[in-house]
Image 1 (cartoon, rainbow, N blue to C red):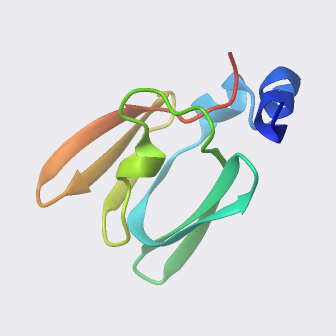
Image 2: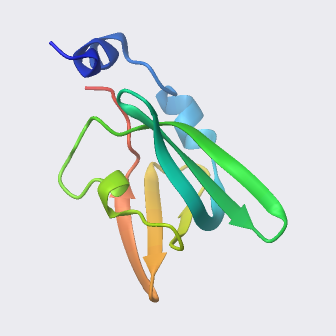
Length: 102
């Protein structure tokens, strides 16, 4: 078994209430795999830089945001929502919040 299975079982990452309370809006300036099954995304909104930590990348659900997201895309999530939006060339594509929960 890979480490991903252990993470899925343990439920690492933000719980549903934390995921609902988060909000962000910015342009992706960098993304990388920080550890097995989790990545990090750095976004910029003007002079403000924000880091999205513990983004689950092992649950490869159909249309997963991690595989689609590229540097230069706009990324936002509204508070109270579990949907991430990626805007590229004026096209808004919605994704379920990436999480490692079953």
